[in-house]
Amino acid sequence: MSRERDRIIKKLEKNPSQECNKIQQKFYPELFSKFGQVTDPRHSSYTEYSSREMLGTVYYKGIAGISSMQGMIREFNDETVAGNLYGFMGSIAKEYLPHAVTVNEFLERLDPADLEEIQSDIVHRMIRRKTFDDAKILGKWLVLVDGTELDEGKTKKNDNYLSRCYNKGEKNEFTRYHRSVLEAKLYLGNDLVCSMATETIENSEEYNEKKLCEEEIKQDCERKAFVRIASKIKERFPRLPVCIVADSLYVSERVLKICRANGWDYIIRYKEGCAPSIEKEYQAIPEKHKTGKAEYVNGVIFKDLDVNVLKYRETKVKKGEPVTTEFVWITNIEITDKNAGKLSGAGRSRWKIENQGFNRQKRWQGDICHACSFNERAQKNHYLLEQISDFIKQLYEHYYLKKNGIKKTQKNISSELLASFGRQLTETEDIPAQLNDSVLN
Image 1: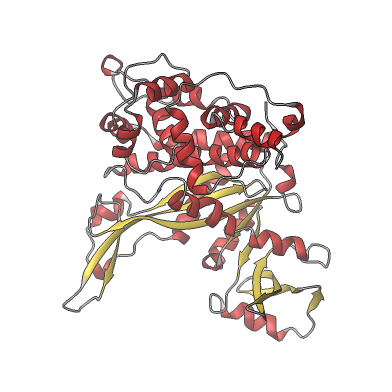
Image 2 (image 1 turned 135 degrees about the horizontal axis):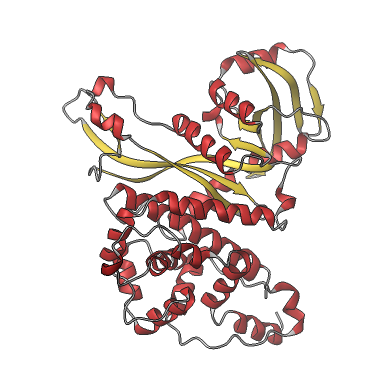
């Protein structure tokens, strides 16, 4: 790298928070006004901080990668930080940002549906921008569906936690409690995924009221949650051309019929044992189409449905030896020699919800597993705000850091954004012409 370019890069890195804010203004300038428009559950005479300031503070907690509410108090208890964050939010500065206890009391009363409206609006705006149209496969938007476990431990923090019994019937029997979530993310290409709909996997009020004995308990699960999240997606995006991409857990007649009823395509990973009749029918068909690394058969019978089966074999050299891995998917899209490669690529994109979704939010960009509140409603609101923060940060990483050749480890992105909150911010210096094509203005 030349000294001139090295100097330019250093100038570009001066105020990360300002550049992140520019990305937010570029892609979703309505964010803070939307925060201010939520239905405030408090009495107006008792409010010191607006809903814009309450939600904006938690949003910047996510931008900074702060895991806990105590950490937020510690890091944001600075005059310069408070002044800068109020300025970012478009609010008149106060001496302090809202305290964690005040924020949690607000989130305990706020209806998560208000934040889900913002979640949906962000997706609508990204779709309408046309910037991400290249991410579509065969004219359909890929919707990646997967679940993950969040907070887990010996303490049942509220009645909606699921339970898991270990060593049942033995002297050392014990129970652990956890909360989980099913997430649908819209794939926008370039490793960008945007939270489209969220459904908590939890014990409902009806379940808790029945007070069933252990033998009668049938807890919520991913497949049950899929029915609810599919209904949300269809209601919010009734005309959106969708292709559901999911793992082998969703190889079920009910899931496939929901996709058919909603007019959606699907590409679902198939593993031996999840629906043995599919593999049996596939092997019974003598003539299989082959093209490159792919092999496929259309019209395989699965109960009262027809599915198309695609197998893709990939060989890599590991420790000097070739290792072949086989991937198998079922789909309702007719497979041809021309689209087999695209379909296999779309099927493998499901990993984006793991890597660009859950993994980064658990390890590098905060910790969605941390219970910032014991209250069930507040937990949902914290999670939704984390999804919003993380998507803006993904845009910042791709459209600012990557486009300008600024290399940072995932671990350092959040910490440097946090550090810049406490700087006396100045106007961003002009960027020389040779980098103008990389910078969003």
